[in-house]
Image: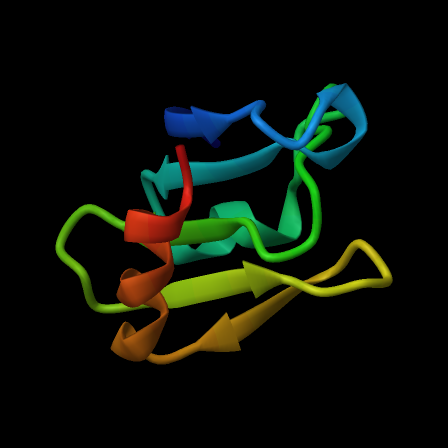
Length: 76
């Protein structure tokens, strides 16, 4: 299991940190690290760009489409 933070935006304050993570494997999305503290709208993806997830308002990670990559430009 491995989550790698590749981008982080603190411009909206510590409580609203959106992050971009690269995951090693799709199964990793089910094993969120205890210290993961990103805000809703954060993005996780696989290195080969075959799967994407967005953080929902309830704190869960929902599978998304490659359209989510547009959010990277909005994060930090």
